[in-house]
Amino acid sequence: NILILDFGSQVTQLIARRIREAGVYCEVMPFNTDPARLTAFAPKGIILSGGPASVTLEHTPRAPEWVYQQNVPILGICYGEQTICAQLGGKVEGGLHREFGRAEITVTGACSLFDGVWQIGQSYPVWMSHGDRVTALPPGFQVVATSENAPFAAIANEERRIYAVQFHPEVMHTPDGAHLLRRFVRDIAGCHGAWTMAGFREMMIERIRAQVGTEKVICGLSGGVDSSVAAVLIHAAIGDQLTCVFVDHGLLRTGEAEQVVTLFRDHYNIPLVHRDASALFLGELAGKTDPEVKRKTIGKLFIDVFEEEARKVGGAAFLAQGTLYPDVIESVSFTGGPSVTIKSHHNVGGLPERMNLKLVEPLRDLFKDEVRVLGRELGLPDSLVGRHPFPGPGLAIRLPGSEITRDKLDILRAADAVYLDEIRKAGFYDQIWQAFAVLLPVRTVGVMGDARTYDYACALRAVTSTDGMTADYFPFPHDFLGRVATRIINEVPGINRVSYDITSKPPGTIEWE
Ligand code: XMP
Image (cartoon, rainbow, N blue to C red):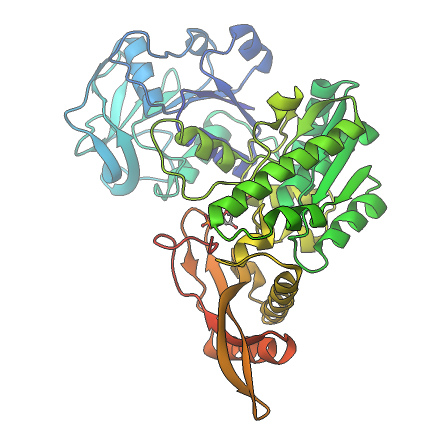
């Protein structure tokens, strides 16, 4: 097992992820964790993460002395390198030579961290992000790599097995980074335990039991991957102390509500409250066409209805959420300064305080693709685990500029079902981040069977993305698009024109509203 001490970098969890990928168990703990807890964890290797502070200032974080007394290998990354230098007798200076982004480093000395990965005298691309830099080495250390702006880009004390790098090996833009981390944890620290998702599942089950005890937990199900995986995992841990609440706002796709209810009630036997609140939502949405007004109306009503149902269940002390690591970083990174609201996102934020509930968030350390692996491990069907993301406000934001009515929702659902059916048949589904139909508020003139039509136009959207933050349109072959258009116009009364949206994000967004 490996301990990662966190100094607040945006990418600390990526270190954890790379180590899991190397099949080794690790935990991230704050830099100021009580040494008694660190001792109990008994790591075979310690990684000090990057962080936003500057060791040149007093009162900024340092690694606990404990770290240097364990006689286990240590790897410092960025701020981690600087704190090692500052603590062991080297020197760090504030930056005239800031370095952000891609850089080249040249290996100048032998270092067991590089064995089998990098060679002396060669240069390699890495990702840097630092203002301060090391300017004098602590005793016993040697420089083993340099870059233009970081003469001490990598340093090592082979005798004490302490290594430190200024670059970030955990990010994708350091192509050999995963290899270096693997060397550190497996070959240098000697961790060979096979970390697997099955092991993670067992460990989380124990943790959830310890956290929840005999209390009751409620979990909001949306039909999406994250909340479903969280619910099934928690149920595996505490059985019927868990109740799921599924607020059906009537804005889901064809067959989705039934699928959720059948899967959870019949297949998993998880207590489930299914509240069909579609009439309530459609009533509140009547006459509303502005995107933010729609989003806020849905968000507020959703919380009200969820709270009502949760109170009926009664006695819950915990609210379970399928929060993922990217949700955590995004919300943290936005607290730093003023940011503009592009879209008011729909979630149950605020509810825990209102209802005085504590949170259970078993997926907080995972990335989406890891959650999918865990979902498969828990026996969730592929049709759910591999499902594209779906926005909280549902189909309401796929009727842009329009009032939401049952009729329009039915037309949209039918077109969406045809589109997804063709995507699956053609084998494109898993290459696409998200694909959906949008029903436009314009009607256009057409001719069908010698008669004039005057019906709605629909737009198709399909994007590739890794995190939803940036996206590009999916390059479907033209004959595929032609086939989908023909089917939609023939099979969906109310639509007589189909177009394909080729906007990337930015400047567009994935959803139209
Ligand atoms: P945009 O449209 O902002 O969407 O490019 C980025 C991703 O977020 C999804 N999305 C939402 N998800 N609640 C959610 O849970 C929301 O209110 C919401 N709005 C957009 C969108 O489908 C895409 O995956």
